[in-house]
Image (tube, rainbow, N blue to C red; front, side, top):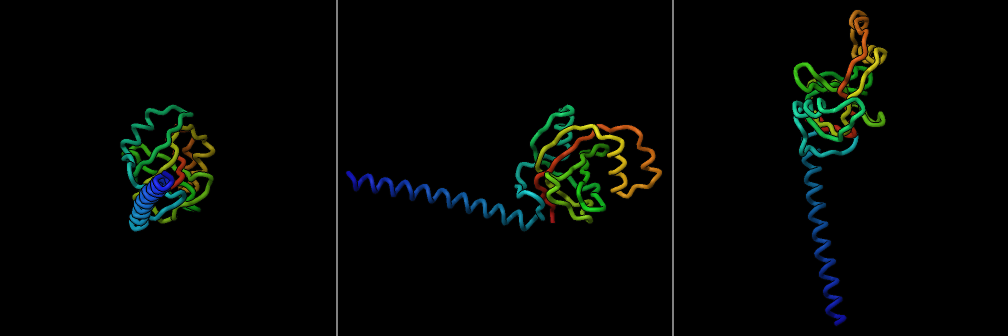
Length: 169
């Protein structure tokens, strides 16, 4: 009986070990694919199951100020902070965009990343941006004094805090 129980225990350990190796192999293959196709910033994320920018716009339109949604979507970079790369704007359609900042100010995007395709994962939310902040962002983007002076009212904004970004090579 002891021999049978010992054999049974060894068989279970062997089966469990084989399953773990398969998962590790799949994870390594996914990581290799990401490394080959994308530059990564922040947390390591997967390229799988990302919404399109239009699908993301639908999600944003369903949110109220103060709501949050953990999500992943793809778009192309319309604009990036010209001083540090500490924020970027991603279009959702022809007229609407989202302002993306980075979790804990923990990473930045390259200053020359405009028009590059990205996948971002993190927290989407709706906020109201003050006139002071809007003017600050306009200065960072290199807008003229005349354009900055035209900013006189707060703006409802679709915001995103990314914990990870994949930028297509």
